[in-house]
Image (cartoon, rainbow, N blue to C red; front, side):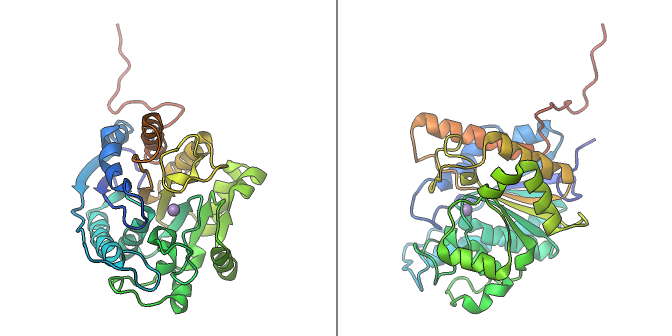
Length: 324
Ligand SMILES: [Mn+2]
């Protein structure tokens, strides 16, 4: 009997999104392949999931792509995300949950938009060191991986410039349907947005104060007290401490421990409502060889727990105790 860890669907579709242009450092485009090579899909299968690998998306490389309105590489980011949006919607409509292997965090735009098209009632758990909700006008960098939420949140529509290539995006996510866990590096403009819109926010301060169990419980209750809505987890591996995940583009000390990350993932699996998971910002072109290996290994360990691999052990599918 397969486990059901993905919003009532008995299968999980895996979509690779080899993309790095939401930020300036090459490397995140390699992650889907490396995460597969490290055994991610096998671990999911061993935990009882029916896994369908949809391969990597063929992301178009657009050479001429100047910044517009403080949005860097707008054509590449817009085009790639439109492609991902369509792919995620299609996977969900086949009654599969969806694991999206990024890629930098700009790909959450396509992933969440595609999810919203198939399941408008979703809630978003954003696990990250950063808030990723700068508008192009508040962004210090112009990199879209620090802005994806601003393009999706309904209440921010009046603060958003029109960006060519992003016309397909329809802001349709309510601020109250987002909760953060793990924040510890939030820009001034982002904090103003979080406060103005009252976004549920469990920074590392709250993790320290209440403990991870209370934080996960509060976050899930804040998003959906009755516990029935599909969950979109957008997991930036930089939420985890750089001692555990060193190879990532914007590491911030003081992050989640491996145990805290495991706990979040196990609790989400336990809800039975995980519908889409984004795994983003693994960059193996950064750090030493040992850093790179540790990053990929720990990423697979954490992400597989969202699909039912447990620290208390798993009985293999179809297993019967041997008798002499
Ligand atoms: Mn992020």
